[in-house]
Image (tube, rainbow, N blue to C red; front, side, top):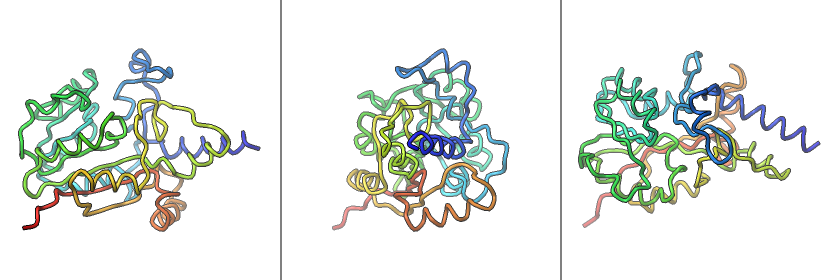
Length: 260
């Protein structure tokens, strides 16, 4: 019975991570400690289906808007940068994987190859130069995400926003796996082998607010496509119980203003 439940959970995860790249021969060469690819290209969406109103990428793009100066942290191969540029945005990328960073140069006006875990990573990035800082599934990979949020405030203009996506570690699929003694790191998804931090909606909110931001928007995003009929149902459940049914946690946040 436990094996059957684990297979069910894995089937759901594959369907909810169906947007992710699974065939990554280049990344297979650069494997991590668990034998999975460490290449940032593994996150690139290769889903040919149209983005519906439940799609995480579509929601992030809508929150960012058009004609903005965007600092995209973790730009990977530039697959989101491309969409932002098509919306009239000017994109500066930050990427730790040099191979992916070179590909993203086709869409970004500039790309900084660096790790946010380095003490001097802010050098060369203009202060107060951006309307939006996009952190799409990035903070969970950092040793100290709180410190990164503190430093990112310097890059936002006076009315600038952070747009953040984080995986929900207590999604029902992960809970089911843990219930039956399974906590296996994988190539991508909630238990990505490069994740160093894990968040719930409560702890994610607490981290963002403690770094000096106030949250202006929150959305519990569901995962990849189940089918055309089920997606509205899953989204309704996520709105009612985000801790259980949200696959990813989306936040928009602005710097707190000092009261006099």
